[in-house]
Amino acid sequence: MNVSELLNIVNGKLLVPDADLTRDIKGGCGADLMSDVLASIQQPEGVLVTGLCNPQVVRTAAMADMAAIVLVRGKTPPNETISLAEKEGLPLITTPFGMFEICGKLHQAGLPSLEKPVPVDKCSCD
Amino acid sequence: MMETNYKQPPKKVDRVVENITPAEELSYELRIEEVMSRDIRTLFPDIKMQDVVEFFRTNRISGAPVVTRQGELVGVISMEDLIRALRVYNLDAPVSQFMSTRLITVAGKEPVVEALKKFVSMNVGRLPVVDETGKLIGILTKGDITRGLLRALQRDYQAEEVRRYRARHLFEDIESDRTSLILRYTIQSNDFTRGGAASSNIKRALLRLGANPQIARRVGIAVYEAEMNLIIHTTHGGEIRVEIEPHQISIDATDDGPGIKDVDLAMKPGYSTATEEIRELGFGAGMGLVNISRCVDSMKLESTVGKGSRLRLKIFLKQDETVGEGYPANREN
Image (tube, rainbow over all chains, first blue to last red; front, side):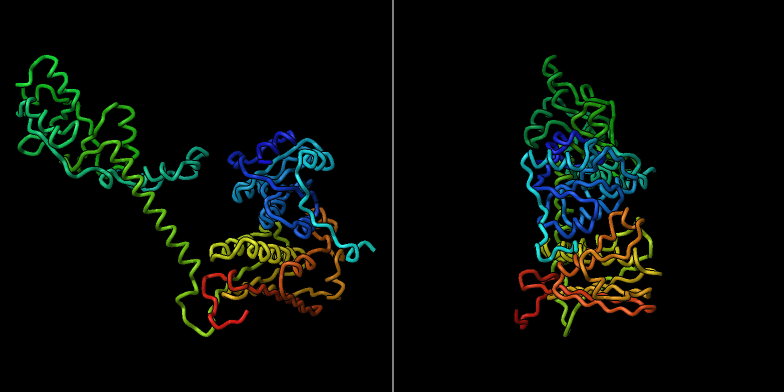
């Protein structure tokens, strides 16, 4: 799947006009906690689906070598976020759908999850 | 002259200007005299059109400037003018009768883009190039511009290649018992807008030095978490110091307070002292230190309440992952 196809699937709007739409997307990751993204991501070049809009989203995606960012629930991020995405050359997309729906749509379209599960014995929910 | 204005393209004026291609940018930077042909074949105005045929054929050209014996440019004669003379069977006429006297010239000091504009608007095949005094110094065709731009692009590309090569081989020719490159960054407390700027620069520096992307990503993530910790938790911010050596990368994040009460507890996944406000920013999940330890080969955290904390990280590089191409020959792996 490339960025252009991703835009179609999520019915999204591209917020960074010069983004490379041919860029390949190898999988996905959905989270609002940026540390979770950094902790769970196991491969580069995925799409980050998030409800968070601050510049840290772009920093996190750039640090993890991700290929695109989708902001759910029609959010318009602050200008700092958009200009950082431009600087990092990351396609930033906003979609009217919610997190569950977007992850479902992308998974259904064949996009694998790039999230690494936490080993059962290391589960920290106690 | 307007010269200085042309030296650089007017950057950041609007989107269109920002998005110009390297070739377009070069057409602003390159001067006409750098790409024009200096080997000018000129004709005198009193030469017969008959002789122009032979002149074009032997010189393999299709046009030439017409210059008086005093060196003054008076016109341009082209194949088209020759055809006009042929049609009226008047090859005995002098060049001055058929030449184009509509003198469209360009100045040698002008940028190439000015010539491009004239080629488009005036519909001419060649432009005589003159100096400040109006003296003919060269001739310019679209082919000269293409060749000049290609040459300049090639030159820029080679210069960039050399810079990249030098960065990748930074340590190669430097002899010492232990060579390293140290990068220091001051991190402000609560500075969320710039949060991640230091780690982003470190990651870029490592890639520039030839580190493989996976190593750069590991260092980037570890430093990013450390940087966010300084922003979120410290009283006065702190410093990140990255020491790059051919065989290892050492990261030191220090601050002067408030210090961590229970270091073991802080290391536990999910444990966090972050406020609700920080959590809304997507941080404070209690995974920062856990993430860091996952990315590095060695991690030491020391902290004294009231004094501050020091986080020391190391990433060891295998021979084939070395940065700056200066891997010690005698190092065992």
